[in-house]
Length: 266
Ligand SMILES: NC(=O)c1ccc[n+]([C@@H]2O[C@H](COP(=O)([O-])OP(=O)(O)OC[C@H]3O[C@@H](n4cnc5c(N)ncnc54)[C@H](OP(=O)(O)O)[C@@H]3O)[C@@H](O)[C@H]2O)c1
Image (cartoon, protein in one colour):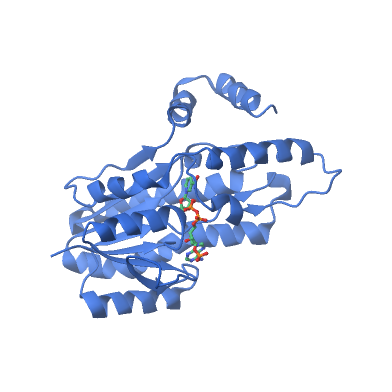
């Protein structure tokens, strides 16, 4: 029997690529987002807002009614945010946390009773390499993804005996619509951070525009959901992005921070 898969944020980017790949491999895929067009996708679509518990419940009920089970949850819905922390708009930060962190947790809580009953399931949280470090002007985003990785760690410990496997995928820059959808601080021209922020923001945009293709994530997820033993983290990115995580671990703190400040000319 082919696995039944729920993926959040499947209207574009990584989510759409993963859902398309898995559907083409014969899995029963339900791709969801706040506004997803059914006609154009090769997988089943459902409207679901991860910030709204009722909407999650409705989507899940529909899947269980149609398919009778749920084998895989991919928490992919997410938003970027960039601002100097001094000027990070709290309401916007709450929206990002509500989507990236609480949205994932809401969906996990909704699917777990089914997966525990089945004694089998996979939960894949789409995190980010940015979870590994507090990068300049991306503190809000890094915090949301670091917190998501902590949930992954805890869930692995809590769920092993119930047959549910949990992991994080940490992408580096990937060419998607994330630049377009990112929440960006509006700084006045005379704001002290303005120059540094604008320059760094351009680098953030470039890391996505020159990022890897989203195509690699479908095969990766495909291999994870057929694996009897899932790793905690799958890091996917350019060699330099992955190296930065290693350097943070092995270099003296002051050397690492100087390296990052030099990189961003701060
Ligand atoms: N691109 C990168 O460089 C990169 C790097 C590391 C990690 N990531 C992570 O990868 C994931 C996918 O991002 P992407 O790059 O593919 O960006 P994207 O193209 O902007 O896709 C984001 C998806 O999330 C959905 N979404 C946003 N808010 C939602 C909500 N409240 N409820 C349900 N769906 C919601 C959007 O659909 P609707 O607007 O239709 O709801 C869209 O389908 C995110 O978690 C992101 O943080 C991306």
